[in-house]
Amino acid sequence: MRTLLRVQELDLKIEACQAREIEIPKQKGKFDIQRKRLAAELEEREKACKDLLLEQRDCEKEIEQKNAQIAKYQTQLLSLKKNEEYQAMLHEIDLIKKQIAIKEERIIAIMMETDASKARLDEDRKRISAELKDIDRQCAAIDAELAAAIQERKSLDEQRTPLAAQVGADLLTRYKRIRASKKTGSALVPLNGEVCSGCNMRVTPQIVNEVLAGHKVHSCAHCGRLLYDRSNFTDDAVDLPVG
Ligand SMILES: [Zn+2]
Image (tube, rainbow, N blue to C red):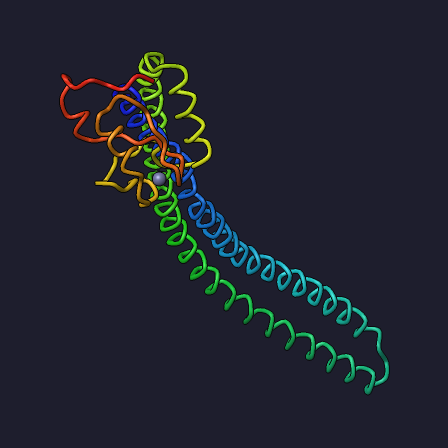
C-alpha cells in the first residue's frame, strides 16, 4: 500500500506532464496565425511597389506610342493640301501632346510614390523580420518547455516501473481499474475522519475501523476508490496492509 501510494504519486505527476504535453504545443497555434498575417502584410506592401512600377511602365509605353503617332502625323502633314485638313491634323497632334504631358506628370507622381512606398517597405521588412524573430524565439521556448515535460515524464516512468513491480498484482490491478474508470486524479484516497476524501461520502464505522487498523484494503462503497489512513503511512514502523 505504501509503495502503491508512491506509484500513485508518480502517476499523478505523469498525468500532469501528459496534460502539459498536450497543452504546451497549443500555445504555438497563435504564432502560426501571426506568421501568416505578417507574410500577407509583407506581400501586400511588395505588391504596392510592383503595381507602381507596372503603372510607370504602362505610362512610358503609352508615351512612346503617342510620340510615334505624332511622328506619323507630322509626316502626313507634309502631304496634306487642304488647309482645313492641315488644321485638323495639327489639332490632333496638339491633343496627343496634351495627353503625353498628362502621362509625364503621372510618371513624376508615380516616382515620388515609389520612393515613399520603397521606404515604407524597407521599414516594414525590418519590423516584420524582428517580429518573426521574436515569434521564433517564443516557439523555441515552447519547444524547450515541451521537451522538458517529455523528459520529466520519461524519468517519472523510469522511477515508476520498479516501484509498480513491488506492488501486489491484485492490488495493482484494482488500482489500475479505478484509475482507468476515473480518468484523472487519485485512485487511492485518505480517510477524512469517517468520510472518503475522494467522493466526500460517509464510510461505515466497520470499514473505518479496519482501514484505521491498516490490515485490509477497502474500497469506498460509493466511489470505489481505495481507502487508506494517513497516520498509517507517516511512520515506517507501522504495519502495512497487504495487497
Ligand atoms: Zn468515495
